[in-house]
Structures are given as structure tokens and as C-alpha cells.
Amino acid sequence: MKSYHALALFSGGLDSILAAKTIAAQGLDVLCLHFVSPYFGKPHKIDHWRAIYGLDIIPVDVAEEYVAMLSAGPVHGLGKFLNPCVDCKILMLRRAKAMLADYGASFIISGEVVGQRPMSQRIDALNIIIRDSGTKGILLRPLCAKRLPESDAEKSGLVDREKLFSMNGRGRKDQMALAEHYGLTEIPTPAGGCLLTEQPSAKRFFPLFMHSTTPRPTDFDLANIGRQFWAGDHWLAIGRNQADNTALEREAGPDDLLFKVRDLPGPLGVARKLPGAVWDDGAVAAAAAFLASFNPKARNSDGPVRVDVAGYPGGHVIVRPSRQTAIPWQEPTWEEVKEKKRLRFTICGDGRGDG
Image (cartoon, rainbow, N blue to C red; front, side, top):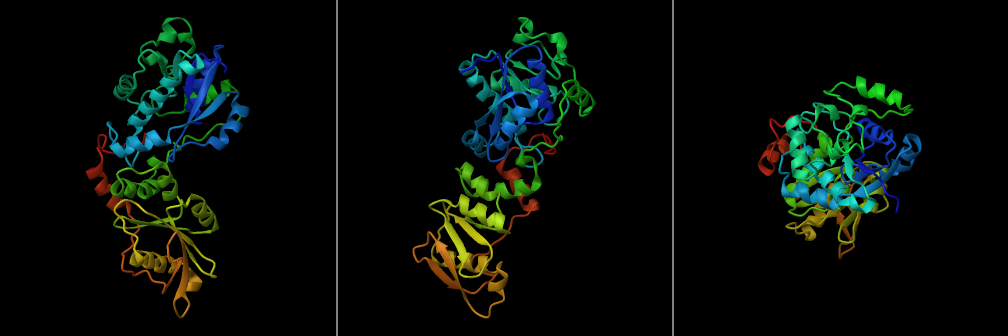
């Protein structure tokens, strides 16, 4: 296994690219860690990034520990939506620290810039991240290093502090100039890339924290497909198009129920059996009738239709398409989620932070 001087947190965003390139430009070997969870990560782009940025990059799966952190309630709270940005950085740094010995590395690189993000890049937040991740001395933030205490790598002379930067605030002028200096031909947009910072995704994900004490990463994969409906602890995902249907079939597990109207092309539905939800004959019939109501041909038929239900002992049910069923299916609204969020989680500050 190749040895490296440093491990870098690498999101694929501009700051993470520049931070890694800055240290590599000093003749040091850098291995970039691209963290992957149900909420962020683009492992399919790693080969492309390696080619255009000239960096060594590997994927690091943090799905299980990330979901566990969210389920337990992030210690430092959530931002505007479901983003636990301070706890997120702590989790990644802890994982990177645990990997240092595997690669012979002595320090960690992060692309943070003082004052760029209101939740996780204030000076006090940056200090908390170092404290709680146990990375004092071994964490180097090249883009704003001159505004921070020296790291061990700088003190030892391994890294030349004079070749680091003192970036500050939300502006991008300095980053763009540095990108030009390094000859970057592809510059990522400044979007965060984390679904937890987006209202539509937060609305999809939040019910899992209310209705399951131990949600799994695959639950969030399912929650990110199609339309999401809830009736108490009963959960039903319905496809909006063929791409959704294909994804639902792929995500359906052996314990799930897969609904499909017989002989009439239209949406598929997947019901996942969460603790507390009893999927008896009545619940299955209600879900089947509700699904059929989204099928135009089924809805326009004069009578009942057959809905095949994989995973159901009876194999199928005969129902009339209807949005009004014995189980009142509802699609969560953000206003409902926002109120319940304050009961379920600690909110960071005024809850407006987006990173």
C-alpha cells in the first residue's frame, strides 16, 4: 500500500480541491477521502476527478455511522433543515484520524475557510470541531491557515506556512484566483451537495426519525425515490415515472411489499415494514387502492382492478382506486416537519445555518 504524508477530506467541491492541491504543490503526497452516505457523496465521479485534478482519491463509506449519529441526535444540533454540519465534520475527521496509520500519514487536510459558512465555519465552531474530533495539531486548513494557530506539520517544517493562505468570508474571488493558478479546467459550482441541506429532501427523510428508532441507510435510499406517503407508522413510496419505478424495484428488499396494478402500465409502490406498523389485509388493501388511484387507466376504469403485491401472502388484492382509504395517507409538508423537528432534535442557534 502506498504511503502518504496527509489525508484530505474531499467533497469534490472547489475548496476541498484547492486545499489538497495546495499541500500537494509542496511536494507532499496527499490521499483524498471522499465520504459517502445516503445524503452525500458521488463515488461514480472519482475516476473523473482523479483524471482532471491529478489527485489520488478513494471512497469512504460512512453510511452506518452517519445514520446512527443523526438518529441519536447530533450533539451540536441541526441547521436550517436536517443538516448537522458541525457533527458531520467531527465524524469525518474522526474517521480520517483513524485511517492515518493505515497510510503512514501524519496530518489531515480540510478545505474550510473561516467565516464562509454560518454554522460550521465560525472560529468557535472550528475550534469545537478540532476539540471533539481529537485532531488538535494534526488538522491543517490550508486555505485559511494563516488565520489559525500553527499545526504540527507547519511547526516541524514539513509544510511551509508561507505557502498557505489567509482566506476569510463568503467571497470566492481568492478561490477562483487560486484555481486559475493551479490550472483547473473544471471548476465545481459552490453548491453544498448534501441532501440534508435541502428542504425537499429533509421533508422526505424526517418521518423516518419519527417512526423508526433505528432507521437504516437503505431506508433513506428508498425515501429519496418517488413520492413519499405516511399513515402513522405505515410508509408507502410511489413512483412518478419509469425511472422511479426502476429505482423502487432496485431498492425493494425481501421484507418489503411491492405493489403493481396488473396489466395497466403505471406507478409502482413499495411499502417498507417499520416497527409498529401492522400490515394486515386492511392495510395492504388500503395501500393498493391508493396506489391504483395514481394509475390513470385504473382510475378511469368502471370497476375494481387487480393489484399484485409481491411479499404479501395472498399475492394480490382486488380494489377500487381511491385516494380516500381506511388508512389516511398523507405526504408530509415542510411546515409540519419544521414543528416536529424542534421536538425531535436540538436546533443550532436560530436554525438558519446552511453549513
